[in-house]
Image (cartoon, rainbow, N blue to C red; front, side, top):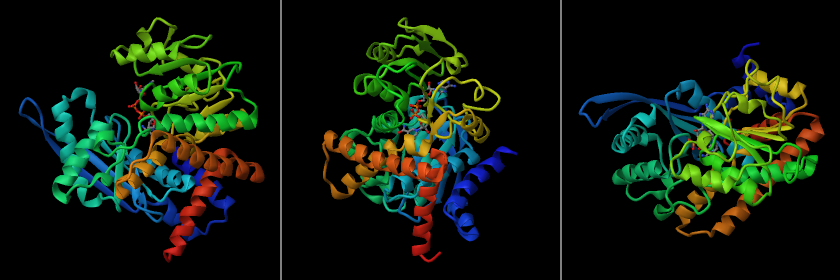
Length: 413
Ligand code: NAD
């Protein structure tokens, strides 16, 4: 079975679970609107380089489309479409009033100067602005984009439309961003793990093998910090693109964060044994958390050998569909991306609401609401998975599909 066929198969399993009609399956699987743009950028040496950008709105039945923008050499139409689709299920599962979208520019931002990055962002914003708006489509940060990039998008959009902070989320706090947004995805992953740990008897504190995290960017580094400081978990290994570090007694996370804050690579830190990105997958642990890029747990590379009790998908689409089936056969639970990493979009919703109301929440309020929202979603997935005897992924899909289908029907489809 091809990868594409298995994706369809996953969707069909969930659609069968909720007895979805054939025409509604067609509506829910296909994108609402796709925009592809050329992005010419004046480089510092005077040349013009032309990049390709995408903004894909998968579904907006439940509210304005919502989803991040990534800058990556491998960002292409299929990747952006897949990520936009996940956003539809994620916002539906969290029961927040958004649809799903994603954007991307095929570029290696590490090769650009800061000014080139700003010019790229402004040009890309000009070209997709026609489909953006606080009630239409609201971008946010994703891989290789951050609060500064969101500030440029806000400025570019507002220069034509008037001051519009609600057109992007994940902004700097001083420009209307929400307290707690930056750490929200990692915090949400931790809340889901705490619930799972209690329900399934896999302790976070004092477990056999601890936690392994691939990726030490926004998601991975905040997650490591919070697991260490708030959940009392033992984080035994982390990695970044240059490689990783491992200490079976647990890493000194504050010291590692201080090392990275000085601009030094993770594997050069002396508080653990250096491991390659391939070796990371062989470390025995209770919780394995891919928090870098998609497609990293595969049939060929590691699905048959990884040695953990639970895979928690911090990244989007880290497990290929074939690997997913292997993990299921091996009895390794997978907490799917659109549940595990939904904390970011949930706090983005709070940011958008704060912008529209021009009223600021405290950090405590943000965390309290996030915990309540993501725990409710987790509980509904756990209960449906138990009732129907299906995986967390199928149950989560089932709930999300049902909500989007209900909205489509109420709108007359
Ligand atoms: P980021 O750019 O801040 O960090 C990415 C991290 O992955 C970096 O530490 C990088 O060194 C590492 N990395 C890259 N390639 C690697 C490799 N081959 N091996 C090991 N490490 C590697 O990105 P982020 O915002 O943390 O996003 C990570 C993932 O989480 C993505 O899949 C993203 O779509 C998803 N996600 C992010 C958010 C968010 O709020 N930032 C929300 C939901 C989902």
